[in-house]
Amino acid sequence: MLSILDDDIYDDGRTSFEELLAEGEYKSVKEDILSGFKLFQKKYVYKSVAIQMLIVVFGIVSQVLTVATAAENEDVSFSYMLIVMCIVLGGYFLIRPKNTYRNLDKSLGEIEGTVYKAEIYTDKINISTLYDPYISEEAEKEAMLAEENKTDEEKNPEDELPPTTIIHLDNPAVEMLENPDLFVVYVKKVNVFVIPKSAFKPYEVMEIKNRLSNIMGVRYKGE
Image 1: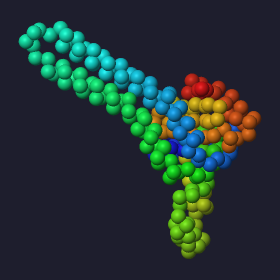
Image 2: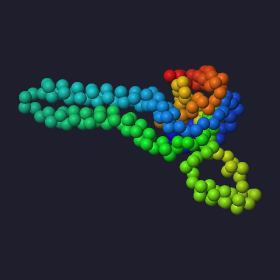
Image 3: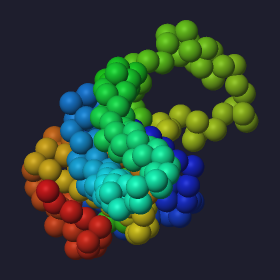
Image 4: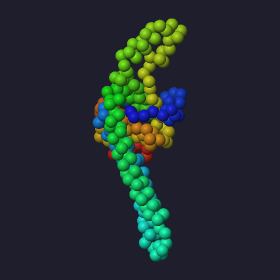
């Protein structure tokens, strides 16, 4: 799981009456996250880069033609400046996805090893954090001490529940992609949630694929 938005695509208080297709636990693994992010870049980022590069090439070609057809004493310095700017901009467009991937690779140590629980329904996906190895022992002790000092009136059963992200699959901004090893959920083509298929039994994987592909339609894509 890479990021979370405070948005109505996530938990908006709605109660689910839909069928639970599967639930399972999985550990955050660097290779899985990077693989899911590659799928995300392949589907969305690189297509966007291709469009941007077409615009850059058009800008360069148009200015080259301007220079080539200019009169002998005509000042074409502005065209040369635009050509240089287009080349620099094109380089930025090409390098940015690689830099994003590289930065993600470097930062994954902060979340690798976290244990999640995924519950997949026909209308939503719940992703709960069960264990975070990067919460310090001191923080855990302080939380336990604070809980012990609470009175019965102050204690809230919901405080004991793990933090949960709820993604509503009926929202058009939510799409789902799968490869042989992963389910990857995209929210607004920006946020990425990677769920390994190994978290579920083989027949549950088939049930998820068959049911959600029918329900989500074109928003569910196999590789």
